[in-house]
Length: 144
Image (cartoon, rainbow, N blue to C red; front, side, top):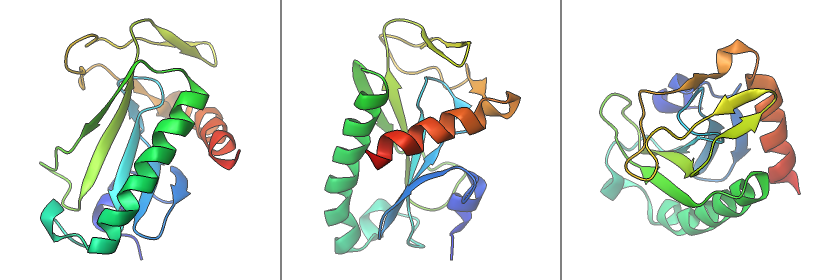
């Protein structure tokens, strides 16, 4: 059963990949192209409380995230933000970073914070018809 944070970020509709203790979702608000949410599927609300198995699996999951995002677009940096101010369960916002504007399906995705901290207030909302094409492309990349 999905936890509250998974549901908040659109699970299962935004699901790219599910692991034993983690799931990778496409972030509906895209401050940079390919922004994801990495959510622990356990109920814990503090990073120090997740199981040892979840910690162990995190290495594999982050390696796959970085490899697959790099296959999607050659990012220059990647940020893992563990904000957890509103959504209770352990999760990271994963933001690939680019020094130049990225274009997907005719839409420009600037990285407004580059080269400093990401600008989480400047988002492209995927409700505008970009969700399905971008989700489909991410699933295709993950399946390779």
